[in-house]
Amino acid sequence: MTVTNKQPVFVYKGDELASYGFGEDHPFGMDRHDVFQNELADAGLGASIHYAAPRRASVDELVLFHSPDYIKFISRKSTEGKGFLDGGDTPAFPGVFDVASDVVGTTLAAVDAVMNGDASRAFVPIAGLHHAGREHAAGFCVFNDCGVAIEYLRQKHKLRRIAYIDIDAHHGDGVFYGFESDPDVIFADVHEDGQFLYPGTGAASETGKGGAKGTKLNIPMPPGADDQEFAKAWETVEAFVDAGKPEFIILQCGADSLEGDPITHLRYTEEAHAMAARRLCELADRHCEGRIIGTGGGGYNRRNLARAWTRVVQAFTEA
Image 1: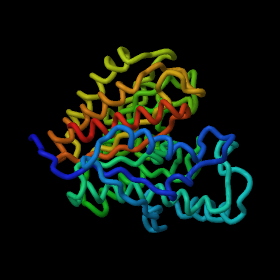
Image 2: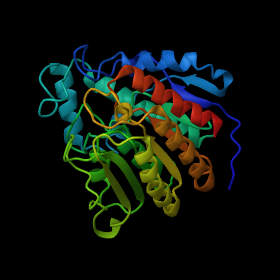
Image 3: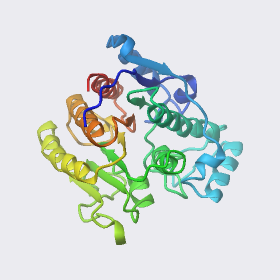
Image 4: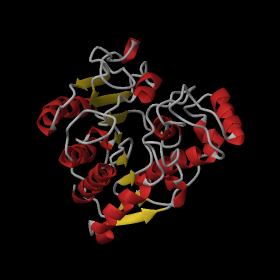
């Protein structure tokens, strides 16, 4: 089925999103939001995009994915405002609970905008916090907005088959293990081989458990892999998602897979992200009535993330 999208692409923008970060000396600094927004403004996309405001997730929404005890832990650490939320990657700071809830709520707002027909597609730059598990923080990620969004799509919008595609350099372990035994979550992740990069998971042999075996696809890439190697891997991803016939697509498009990122070793250009977004839009039109959102994910070279995410938004407007 071909879908003609007449509505704009929603791009979420606001201080609430910009506030998710861990200080100037941390790779996940609070400047990432504005660096992207400035690049997007220069792209001249005009009326094809609409800037939308963030919103905060409620505790009832957070608990769709996260355990009540974990939510209480983050609330307590938010009040204390010191220490770490995990083994040392994710610092606590005053108000972290609210800021992390803003990320989740904004991703849910993007879901609603697409589901309600207000947006043709939607993109949330400071989102895609794919390392957070149901009961723990990890890797700069406090709450897993993508995990909450999957459950939200099922409970509020009554969808069943959700596809999650992740092209961040790091394996989306929080989403993978959160749904490892769930046959209705179509999971495809192209990432740097865990032998060389955090979190060390995502082997090709990890394909799901029990009745979900075969519904998960992990493609570890060697350090130095470039656009050509990504394109080859993408053929497998596209066929896998196409066969899954999802009802909604979530793309986590971390820009730390581009050449020059300070903490990873892949060598893509922003054209890899543009291609992935464009092809997923085609699958969304075929299976999902056009329904797809993008989340920014990682990316610690500011120039890279600005360009990669802008190309994703451009692909969303063109597809």
